[in-house]
Length: 151
Image (cartoon, rainbow, N blue to C red; front, side):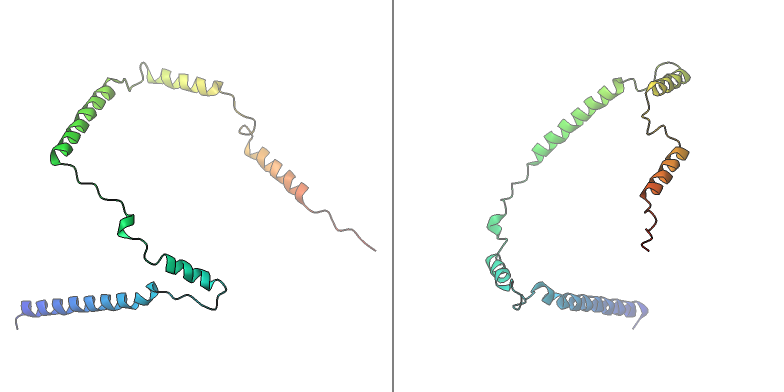
């Protein structure tokens, strides 16, 4: 045997091993899909009745009928409609003035002035030290009092 023939034989054997291993693993899972009801359970009759009532579900009659695929000409018309509407949208977006008008530093100063004019709630104006002082006071209030001497 030549080297390519030996490699081909090795590949065939490896593929056969993979297929057999996969089949073995899948067959081992077969019993997991047919669980039995524990008849010693107090609800076993109800469970078994539900299983028997729904054993044949879902049936093909319960699925909706498939609609036929649209004709290629209908798909072409829809694609062309999308292309036209995309072009119109691009034209509308191109007409929008996306840039700020005027000087950028003036625009930044106006934004800072608007932000400064907005009132800030008192809770957000607290510093970290004030927050920690409130936490310490809350912890002190939450501490249990010393035990009473009962003698």
